[in-house]
Length: 193
Image 1 (tube, helix red, strand yellow):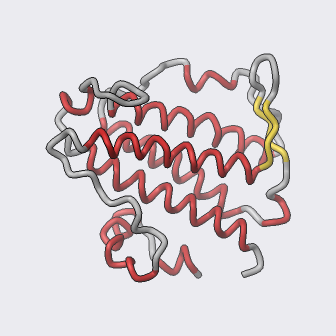
Image 2 (spheres, rainbow, N blue to C red; image 1 turned 180 degrees about the vertical axis):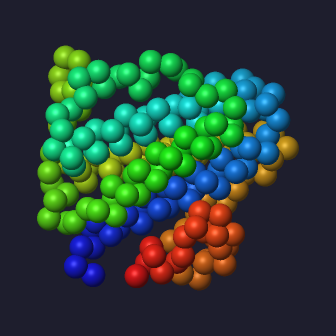
């Protein structure tokens, strides 16, 4: 494999999209009352947490794509947070999360190791943020893991069983993710070969 780090980042983007698909599929089985119910967590509900994850994805994926296309950073970078919770219904969140996950997959698939040290700038008011592509992607994946864990924990207080989110990487667990891969239109060989 000639680009091991970029391939690993691509597999992380795949894991991210798969875990979001699995988690949001579980959340879609909630009643609206359970979806919006106040719970003890960093954000006050499953709805709030999923909305936060989505808006942060919009924020970082936009910055990554702009740098990749050679465009200047977005001057109004906080516009993605103008509405605190843009979606009230899980089905709308599912659709929008899947869309930004596809953008992140396309970005990661196009990367090569030689380009991962390129700097991405986010025009934060007061002091711009400068990070390499690698560091920004690692942060984005960690942010996703952090908040998926919170939603997973909150599901434990509902009638919906929290899904397994750790069955992505091991070859021997392919059968456990086969249904989700079919729903996503993926094949194992597209990710691992």
